[in-house]
Length: 165
Image 1: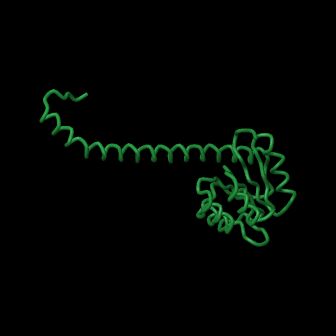
Image 2 (image 1 turned 135 degrees about the horizontal axis):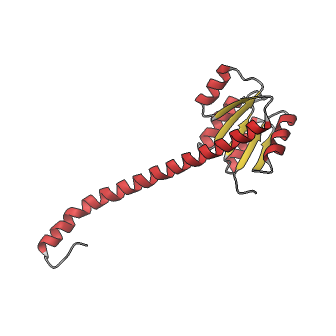
Image 3 (image 1 turned 45 degrees about the horizontal axis):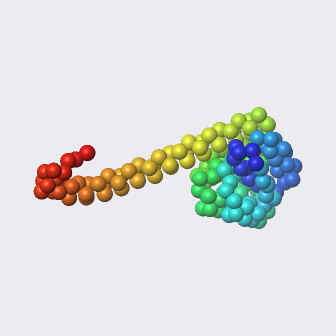
């Protein structure tokens, strides 16, 4: 593993799937899935940072897979890469949580840049989520302190020898 993140490439077509794997493997830890069911199984079993997802696949559609992915790992970034790049498809994918939408055939430099940008977005979102949790914890501590303060104040009034720190 490279330590830079794990990508799941989901495409029923071997050519695009293997092309993406060869492009991204030197930079990231990459696993692949040939259909939606396999993708859902993988995402259920291991932590994935980013998914590249084809829309048109036999069985589950890319949108169905996107919905399931977001239920299982809500923080995963998803880039839809499809040969069916219509405005309606893009809007639907974004509505269900895709961070980007790319039409096939794709440019290698663009793919690398978009994947890098998606990892940055994921890292920022995780930092924000962590900060929100810290704020909630501080708020809880503050509320707990407010409940203790009247008791402390009363104790210092009753015993003038007790000094507040």
